[in-house]
Image (cartoon, rainbow, N blue to C red; front, side, top):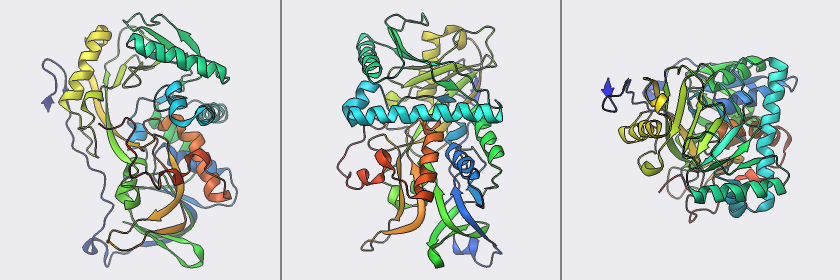
Length: 427
């Protein structure tokens, strides 16, 4: 045990490295493997993998399996704040400046599709994951940020989105004002993953790393895991931040970034009833249905350190989270912290997801990259995986199974991005 903050609660300290995606001869040779066939294999058992399984289950006659290196939902999918937001990398006026008005509008409509699909799922399968249609506040921490919110609200209204601009602090916690999105919802993200898999009926092979992807006869693909050899017609790769560990092509396209969260013991009364983002999204918080207070973020000043795959909480970020509670929510700061954890997000250079057909990058200089027909991916959710999940997984299924166009998420835009700087994930 390690006392992270003087006088604070003690946290279990864990150094976690993702299960290896390389396998040695000694580990594999002479090992009896299960030989299996499937129509579609999904690599990754998080929210995207679960949503892909759900959409595929609506197509008759397909044998679908999911391969997960650890337990379902063990990555960022069950290590987030449970925010299902229509938001992008920052505020709408910044998205308009970065992507253009038409694309920014399409992106927001795309995220609204996730809200609609999620509401439909609740109607069809029940609310087993604390679905909470409470709306969200984007809270301004400065007059400049409030001006940015006002500009974003005006642009959103002009583009047909329902949004409310508030020039006073709705929480009365020394914020300067807010933008209110009433369509945003909170969920228990781990239970949502479980619910999707249960509704799909798709088997999940847990504790199996995919360590090799090969072409097979008849235009099929063969996957090698630690337990089986699987031949399939299509592969959907939804490994997000861990994609570079499986295929080197993603190394300069996906950056693993760590986020940290604290959750207190239950408060005696409810002090907020909305999902909240503040300081351009660098801090986010909500009060859970059981009255606990959740706060995440505070990595803005430590971006260079908060990269990589280690599942660990760090003293600088945890101290910043503690100080934030003391400053803004002293009644929550007075409660013992029950949980501290981290999660690994995947950022792309332009902070939009990428969808495409796999290109295997050689690990030997001089060899040429090769495409692998039948292997498709959707990765790089940029800290908004819950908001993208339903709609992005549906699009991936349509791209892989029907030849649909990936549109604004097509990976072609990043093929010549070697000189493009990262937008804000890193220093």
